[in-house]
Image (cartoon, rainbow, N blue to C red; front, side):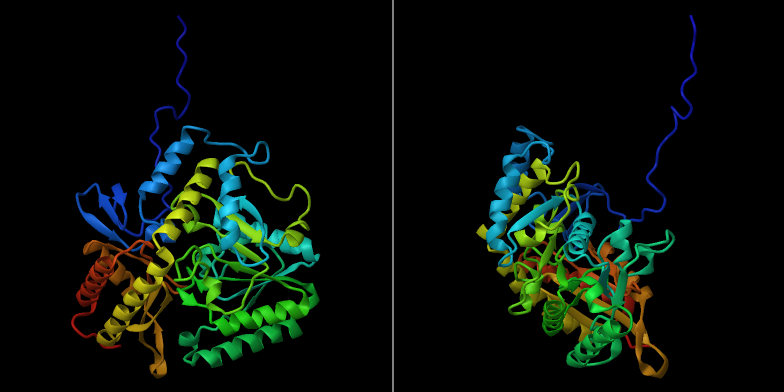
Amino acid sequence: MTVTAEPAGFTQTAHLSPVLKQATPVVVDHARGSWIHGTDGRDYLDFTTGIGVTSTGHCHPRVVAAAQAQCAKIIHAQYTTVMHEPLLELTAKLGPLLPAGLDSVFYANSGSEAVEAAIRLARMATGRPNIVVFQGGFHGRTVAAASLTSAGTRFSAGFSPLMPGVHMAPFPYAYRYGWDTDTAIDFALDELDYLFATRVAPDDAAAFLIEPVLGDGGYLPTPPRFLQGLRERADTHGIVLIVDEVQAGFGRTGKFWGHQHAPGLTPDILVTAKGLASGFPISAIAAPTALMAKAWPGSQGGTYGGNAVAAAAAIATIDVIADENLVENARVRGEQLLAGLRALAGRFPAIGDVRGLGLMAGIEFVIAGSGGRPQPDATAAAAVQRATTGRDLLTLTCGPAGNVVRLIPALIVSEDEIALGLDRFERACAEVFGDGDTLG
């Protein structure tokens, strides 16, 4: 009998990439609603929601039932080969929720894919090469999406060259500049016009790409007047306005879409993902049919895009958001959360700024710098984030300097859960700073 050797590596043990770092040490056993139950026996109030993904809370019974039922029918019906009913139904349900005129939808898997589909469409539709983005924006980690991202160098460093044709303009980050909001808006719009005069001819600009609330860039709401200024310039120069609603959309800001805080604003392309399906991977772009039809044949597609199970979960998510009045709940509970955090800022001077919309709250930690101007304090933010985990409240950091703690409760979060989260956050701050820290 001939004995053959086992293939090399047959008995090796595989590990997750050492580059992957968890924000918390928690290993999940199960989760429901606003709570994650760890294998350590502890119950964690989850104010991360998978970075804003589990919009209806963990394992909402109606989402679970919809996914289970679809799994028994068909899991993968590749939608450029055969069409499936959940995608048709999802598209019909999205129609009344989308901005007026955005009646054509393309589906992908992730936010990055959807962003890339949006800029591809804008370039094809206009025949122009350049995309204008804004400082602090986060649009994804794939090469093109990372080229559009400036929420931190970690997203785009080390694998140059990046995609050409990307130009950056200032974002009206009033706290960073030490200005009032109107001054910051005027500055940012003036600098955008200066970019047009010095670097990017408007006739060469295919699109503006902006988030209605910066996500990884620090949970900064985009001022309505700035969005309206972009709309005016887009209309004047034939530029496509793309609004990246990946994190801010689907009720999170207390309106269904984050850009709706800017009265009368309608984007040309809307990008959505994250909260769309309560945890199942699906994303989409929406545009007017006349604009979408300018995409070149074969430029839209993908093996897993518009997956049947994810589409069924998205249908259930939309129904739950409507039936449980979750957009209004996000508004009311968001007001409760931000009011509580602003009260804490009066107690802990290391909190330089509290901002947000709905259930997107950012707490910026600072330390006195030269001339007394506050400087980012990433060490403090990291310490507070660790301390919240120790008190069974899960939070995340963000911002280019890593000095912002962000709170992202599920849209189903209750008044009592917000109050409990605020109490745990306050205790974490007291643990880090003592009772009444001073800058220095």
